[in-house]
Length: 177
Image 1 (cartoon, rainbow, N blue to C red):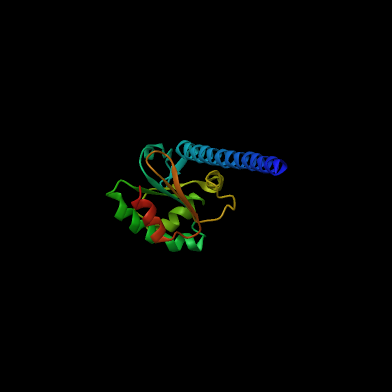
Image 2 (cartoon, helix red, strand yellow):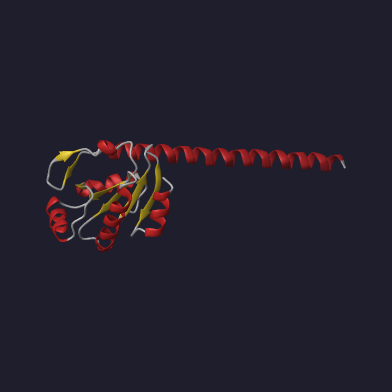
């Protein structure tokens, strides 16, 4: 009987140690993920971009406000398809203080030709092909487009979406801000 108690105590000790290791691993992963997101947001605010008119600028003026950042390209079919819906959502949520921002992972010429055909009423910046690196900092390791990031007013990434946005999901995220 005594040996059964000792065995039970050993099993409990091993389980507790393993559970503590696992919980620590989860917490470290979460903290690391949060730090990575914060670094990505800081990178976004510091990024030197140019607007569609070719004027160099940063988008740091959007810091402190909720933003939806959409990485897109003129040659990307799903990007082109979702832009009118994103423009409509921008109009819907502008009154709630939420701004949509387009980052063209494309050339200035292609972005401007596209905007002549499909005008959008939210700010569009040319990130060039370096925009793919910025998208990777938000976890888009595949480098695919479109890629959408929702950042709250505190600079916390609330959601990311690789591929065409699901409008219902995006509305739920925005309504929760």
